[in-house]
Length: 485
Image (cartoon, rainbow, N blue to C red; front, side, top):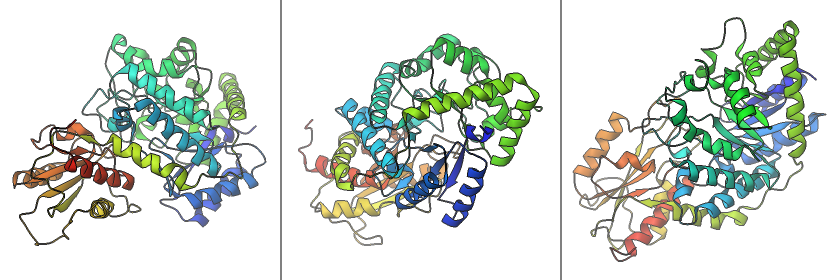
């Protein structure tokens, strides 16, 4: 088989037209690519392309997407859920996690996908971490292990492979591996906590994603993706993992800047112990580099053969279903919304003056990178609150003494480079909160409100469904006698 079977090519429906993507798919299939990863797709378009891929390929493929917050995270029109940090705060966390994973798998499989790049098993132990935060189930290794296993079991029970990431743990970094090579200098004893969730998951998860992070205490100065001591000695031999090892995206600076000059990053990752190579910058060049390295080295040729066999073996357990049948939105919608509402977390007692019978204003602070496909931030929150009987004033000078609900969007995102509010957003929030009666509603990690003496709500993520959940939860709390539990 061609070395192309090692690679998952990226399909960016958020950036390219369908016709451009069809040309790329045709070129990739001629190279016998191992599969594709979908980004930013309308669900109907993703289903169409998946069907065309299955019809055109005469071999089984991996069709994947990042689905940490439900199938709707990258497949618009499907169900979204709060991020893992929010599910962990749910009153019935394990069942909420299982429901989210099951829904995610059913909807993904209904489009013809068979690999969910989730769950995140990193620990949320570093407040300055710009890329993990709410994507983690929390800081307690035992809880992350339990909820991670629940997600994996529920997802894989529906015929979709899960992928535990980012091995051996991205939680202690203060840098973003999209933009640099983060380095974790913690001793091996401390890193045992980071390894615990992966150790628990290795018994059943189909796939593990490597981190583009350096861990000198675990072996070597380069990213884990390129270190045999981490992927073979630790993951395979110590933890006993027998499934697929998938790289994080190979277009990221954390891996490309530290590869050896005489060996392409793709070939180096294969040599280190990776079996699937995700999102190379140039697919044809990457395949050629691996085949050249295999021709020059019997050891690399052996690794190539072993990786192809591993992928085929795991793929046999999770064949992509086509044509699939996605569940109707009503199958999951009401319970998904209930889970989202229950996961919205009050950061303190709401003030007595917040009265559902009195007019309120709604302000928004968008402190994230632009997302042009997203509906206007705050629109669904306003509509949901109005439907609950609140008088939501239009933007403008009307009733300047009315309380303000200030919605703040600040989530972990690739290339963003910070875990905190930007100085501009912080100054704006301080100004609004300091001017009088205002309640923050945060769509991000609750610790972002630690410096502000203003109780509010944490809604965790910026998916529109979280806006509706936050409005419902605010209405519930505001109508409940203050001091009630």
